[in-house]
Length: 352
Image (cartoon, rainbow, N blue to C red; front, side, top):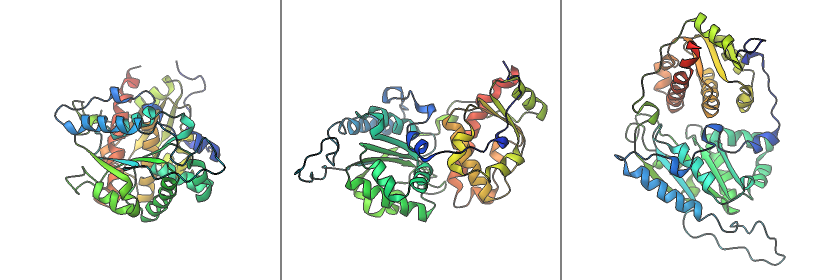
């Protein structure tokens, strides 16, 4: 049943997100609420996938003891505990859509600690947290955790990489276990499959704390699935927006302008309560700054399983050839893959 007031507009929203919410939301996104190791379906043709489940299950079980820093019970004359034996981190090394986030979220769920002692977020969300709390406060906030999971570790921004590497070094000193994923750039190390060498080089002194787990496979979002539906007409998109309760309706160029006025850390809040995003006049993004903001929005929509119905050009034509061949290309390929999946999800809205 449609909302009597008609569809909402993302362009009319200017959310304010307190720092406390950034911390509280460091849990697996709604799309991964119910995933577990036993809901991951390894590809029989890729034995590394089943091996990753076995290794990560054991890693989670090993985190069930007392916090390595002795958190939980304070003793007046306790000696500083010895560093845990073996790597205190795992790095899931694979390409797009092989289920790395599913496995990372499963590790979070399987780790025997209360949710307040586990954190899960993307690399961007972690840098946003540091920006909101400050470096020292972030160390204090996360230092008592059992586990920190970082999805989509970004290797293309040297400044942020150094910042997060420094943060992780401080957390490791306090006994926090780490888990991370990232994607290599397409065209490198086996056509975009493996990034372990890049990752371990960029985090420098932390490399000894990580065990790389190579996960082979193809993008499950395209494995046996039909191609993304062609864009619909403006009239079809608008009609679906009015017929779908909780849907938003925006002109794509106007939305891109609005995203420039909203900090990316608020893009999740921008979509609060939205059941479907309907966009008219979708076209190629004009510049790289705009494209990177769109990537963040695509990530937040994908995390929340919000279908995207659009008119205009297909999503694989959003980014120019220069962008797809440039330094941020991994982000653009990820956005195309995720928006394609959300476009499939939106197709039934037109037939309502």
